[in-house]
Length: 146
Image: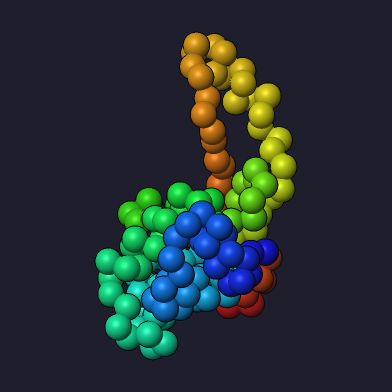
């Protein structure tokens, strides 16, 4: 898992300034265990660094996304983007539709399928991602107790 320190180092090594607002946002992001939206981050940063504006939240998220420090994941219905802290290696996600917890599945078991589909369509693949949406064991257990 990426830590605040490692994320800050990555920003510095790429030549980006690590301002107070960026540091506050990175700290909040690194501590996340479930997916989050820009709105979630905006709400959280307001309590620790009220001067951080909406534009800074979005610019920082886009910067972290471009550096591979966060990944974009889908939300129910695809109405808005959500994010998770990146692990760095190619992987896929299991996303709980109830609580939002994201479990990373390391490795890729669909490479052969992707290659086959691309070959059949004469398509050059630049990348892929897969998310499987369902209920985690805790949410299933809670639902069965109701």
